[in-house]
Length: 117
Image 1 (cartoon, rainbow, N blue to C red):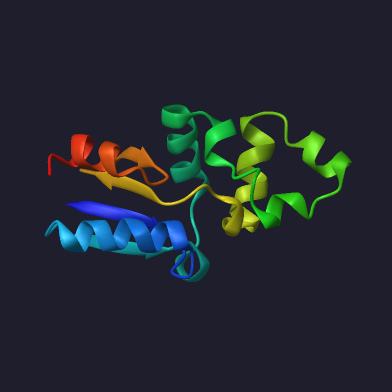
Image 2 (image 1 turned 90 degrees about the horizontal axis):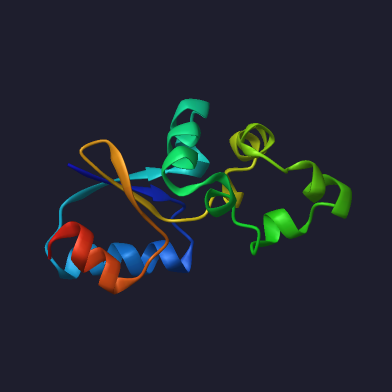
């Protein structure tokens, strides 16, 4: 089972969804905004990808923070605490296969390789 995590109005998530549909890949969508995310899931992703990649520092949500607030998010623990309350700052989409995260963001070549399409 493939699960796609993200928010529906994100252009990168839309690209990933379009690619999955075009390639006949069945998936379940988990909307961060409506369903939230657990600390356990964020911890798992941080261990796989690194907390620096899971947090979207290029996004508006993170950029709205003061320099001091940004500087305080300097390791996995404060990053997870921040992301639980600010799900829009999670890099997206995240794709899991068999309950294990395998993709972060959207690059067509990576999707083809990791999902075997």
